[in-house]
Picture 1 (cartoon, rainbow, N blue to C red):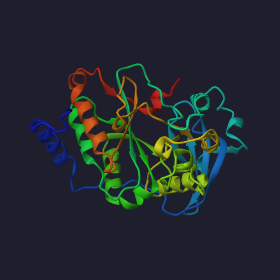
Picture 2 (picture 1 turned 90 degrees about the vertical axis):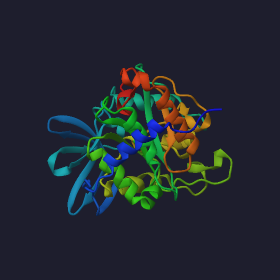
Picture 3 (picture 1 turned 180 degrees about the vertical axis):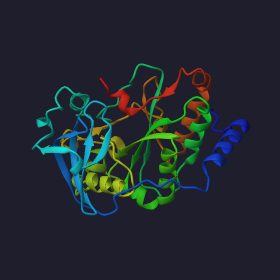
Length: 329
């Protein structure tokens, strides 16, 4: 039987880190609380001599902004329209710097694997170095954030890495019900303890008891436009810049809805190691766990994974990879 208990020493380390992290001071991110006219906006953008791809535009407090993507690093940023030159185009493939970029290659990879009902999108192991790409999903839940996931990470990598790269998939309904937990995560990012890639996990994350081909985003009456854009707006209002990545609820999709998501300029991310389902992490795996209080097995399996790799972590032979780096073909 697999032991799911933390050692006394490990518990002490976790509690020590928790004491250091939960300090009275808070570091707040600047958000865009009064967003209007938020829409898809594909554009050639030039900012400070560098090319970007515009994917959204919006207005906040009488100023216009563009949500942009670096076509090669896939990093997103919000730029004031007045500070850059932009030319709108009808389709993302008409953007000058899209063809041949990492962004375009990611689209092609997704299209090569978009016909599966579950786990379509980018789900293969990468890069070649030892370690994993950690993705943490926060689906709607009334339970508190599983902070032990993050505390265990800090304990495992203490003195090894100063800022740990992880990806967090946010659903709108989780954000609305976990204001303090969200701010706790943002504070960790702002303090430089975490490098977080924020993934769009839809606004409602609908789920029912129907078969998979009629469930989640495939359920009747689902409005994909609202699920994607409303969640992005909510993230921006909270001071979070959405990444270019998207995770399907339940990892369930279809060819048609995959193309619809690509039509928003987003790159779907799957997983080859959903720990709670008994899938094992390999070097370069995209690991999936839920830290929303509803997946104790996955959380404990992840802690066991960290324990099993402690020697390699100390020798810097097992690391956390940034999701952006993995898709740089």
